[in-house]
Length: 212
Image (tube, rainbow, N blue to C red):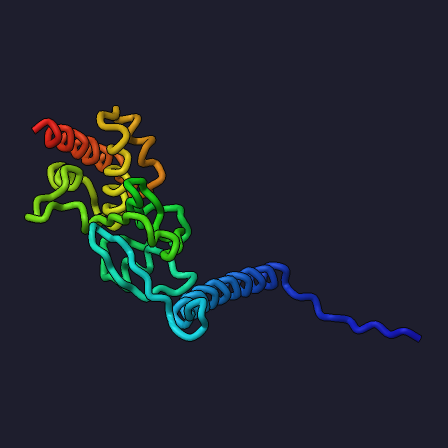
């Protein structure tokens, strides 16, 4: 004869609340573990040869730089943590926010989504390489100063690099054209109107410098 065990009824509200809390806690734990695992894996990775990291030469801001690069290391990581060029920011680290934008052969790229070893034969420029040798700011950088175009400025270098790259092929854009041209960059302060005004001033400064 089959017997059935009667389970005491549990409050629906209590069980639902408990379930939601457990899901949130579990998701946060998994996300944290994944991030830590990724960082530790990258830090402990070795070169293709299996013994040591790969020593390569990069052309960064007009200089030849020798650097040890791991096989899955991103350009953003190399620039910041190997070469000390911290003007390149790591925001989303998944090619969405544009904070890590640099120029590669004069074209803007998200450096967090490019493997360092793929740019060995190319010219990389970061925001540190925009000013002239005597310390004079690039016209777009000066536009930021002129208009005080950012709040926290975490995204600033990405916007500046994207604008410099865009102006290389669109010297005199309208406000709407420039907005579209740098739309791949995001600002967490959401002060886009002020940023765009600063970038437009930078474009004007650049045209003036080229005429002069």
